[in-house]
Amino acid sequence: MTDTVETDAVIVGAGPVGLFQVFELGLLEIKAHVIDSLDYPGGQCIELYPDKPIYDIPAVPVCTGRELTDNLLRQIEPFGATFHYGQEVTTVQQQEDGRFLLVTSKAKRFLARTIFIAAGVGAFQPRKVMVEGAERFEGDQLFYAVKEPAKFAGKDLVVLGGGDSALDWALLFAQPGPNRAKSLTLVHRRNGFQAAPSSVAKMRELCAAQQMNFVVGQVTAFDERDGRLTGVQVTGSDAQTQVLPLDALLAFYGLSPKLGPIADWGLDIERKQLKVDTEKFSTSIPGIFAVGDINTYPGKKKLILSGFHECALAAFGAAAIVFPDKRIQMQYTTTSTKLHKVLGVDSPVFE
Image (cartoon, rainbow, N blue to C red; front, side, top):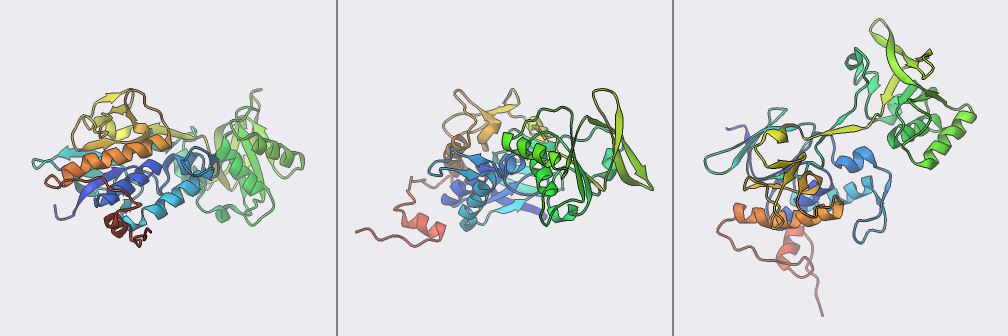
């Protein structure tokens, strides 16, 4: 057990609710480790709508998913949470002393007094290109996310998909700028899109100006030479197939949420969601809490602000476990000198 991280709390999920859980635990002086299957924080906000406006965060008239994530990360800085990205919690076993042993897909081990499941609707996995041999090109010529746009500048690109992500990246690479592609073709199975109308209008404008191409159809096969992907075969509704030459293939078919290993932890599940009480948002196993979209209870509303509320009550529920002999008092960040010390801010002087 010498290679096992011992901690008071492990948070599974680094989306907005998981990040705010760090804050609420921090106020109660509970340190946390955060585990997420993605390689970065933000969850759905970053994966699905990083640059789309959100209007229902209290006291914030409008912000993007990226801005919300960045603000939450700044807010939790005083608490020194440790993040473990790119891995899932595969097994959870309760020990004789009541603590939980967690093991991740990267063989990282944690021994925690409490667990907070803030995994949204589950671990996100990109919907893959369903062509034989596609996995051979992943990370080299076939990509399901763009982390370094400059890597694709000056290349012949084919972008797959009809949602916001596909349109946003296609527009970025098609228009003049430092990331402009040599050529760009957008492929979607139909002429209708599930994207912002303004993005669709701009795409059609660029096509009319011959700055990019749009093809209706589906990828049915690859062309390759010497182990390198050279093109994709796209078949339209008329059963006609054309070959689109490429240097790189970007596929944005969306993300598939999966409950994953959580389904095997012995928790009470209802329609792929974890049943919780509304006093402290505990699951059917004491010490394991669930907050955000992953949980269900009478009247549940899948809103970020609802998840924030759940985090506060779950933190107090956990404090009773982490500090069994300590009386937990309700304090306010506006007036509590103790909380000001925890937050690393000067206590204001009221006259």
